[in-house]
Amino acid sequence: MILSQKVSREGRLAACIVCGTKQVRAFLNLGRTALANKFLTQEECARPEPTFPLEVGFCTSCSHVQLMDHVPPSAMFTDYLYISSASDALAAHLVKLSDGVVGRFRLGPSDLVMDIGCNDGTLLKGFQRHGVKTLGVDPAVNLAPFTDASGIERFTGFFNSQTARHIVARWGKAAAITATNTFPHIPDLEDFIKGVRSALAPGGVFVIEAHYLQDLLEQGAFDTIYHEHVSYWALRPMQAAFERLGMHIVDVERIPFHHGQLRVFVQREGEGAVQPSVAGILEEEKDKGLDRFDIFQRFAERTYRLKEKLWKVLNDLLVRGKRLAGYGAPAKGNTLLSFLGMGPEVLKFIADRSPLKQGRYTPGTHVPVVPPERLLEDQPDYVLLLAWNFADEVLRQQDEYRRRGGRFILPFPEAKII
Ligand SMILES: [Zn+2]
Image 1 (cartoon, rainbow, N blue to C red):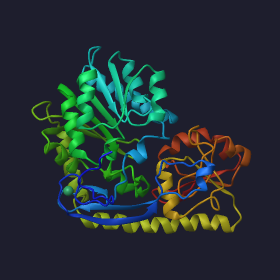
Image 2 (cartoon, rainbow, N blue to C red):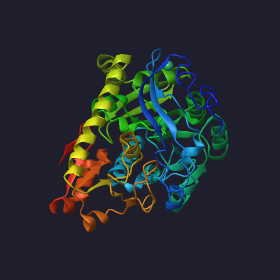
Image 3 (spheres, helix red, strand yellow):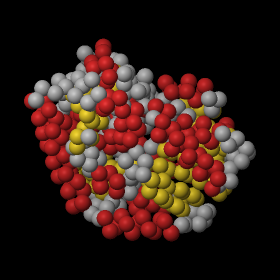
């Protein structure tokens, strides 16, 4: 994998990945952490584990918030333990997205929909119901059997301007390209956007869903920060990134999913009519100060305070002899565990529905991941909800645990026992 030229050989950011200036100032340091999706086998726990600096910066020239250090994508995405279908809410959300895109852009049987970062094909299965042609693009070799089983065509590899040429030659141009929770992963934005531009059919649309910086700030959700997420997107720098390369944002909406996301529709310049929503969100961002460094310094101070508060809540319970566990082993949970320095001495285990993670250990902190049934067998007194963005779904599923007296601890927006 060739790294972006904006990253020095050591992985330290040399220039802003959007505007190319050297104006990126660090504001939050979460220490060195292991890769958030690298859940370990028992044997791997005994071996030395690589860790990488996790620090976030703000570009004072274009306002783009980004990681100060990059890890080669091949180290993170070729063997991937997160599957979209593991969450009912996410699967339902993606099916709805496919309905919306097909309806709005009147896609038919001759149209190709390409999903970049297609994971296990959950979104493309939604598109398949409408009879359009589908192609999944994803470097995760271990997830290929999932799309194969659904009869979805797959290109296993990274998407960039070079692979886009190969894809177009074999499958043709796409009427719609989607990237849900993938766009923040891209270190070489310029090359990626060139690839998208060349792979779109005339009048085609690129649809992005990504966690939204404004929501991240409002909730204090620093756990969204981990090495896979090179970018923390606001609309303004995203607009700049596309406009530099002959594309423009035609529509945008905030969606209350995960912990708040931005859904963005992008087309080539000269195609599509720009909706008033774009100016609306840009204005909101200006009002909230998303273009000001001091807003991010304040976010960092709040993060350090949240760490103290959460430690205090957990420590008080431990002192009283309470037994603690965790629920949900999302990648973000590992930022939280690492930043708090919390291992199996605090959380006895973490329950998670994903069979790919069960039997493994959290990266860096080595807490065992077990099936959800363990909650009732073991009935710990308190459970830290690491997958807090799926709180409603988890609380519903674990109703019996709570009925028997178990309590959940929500870490965000501030530590709360429910
Ligand atoms: Zn910049």
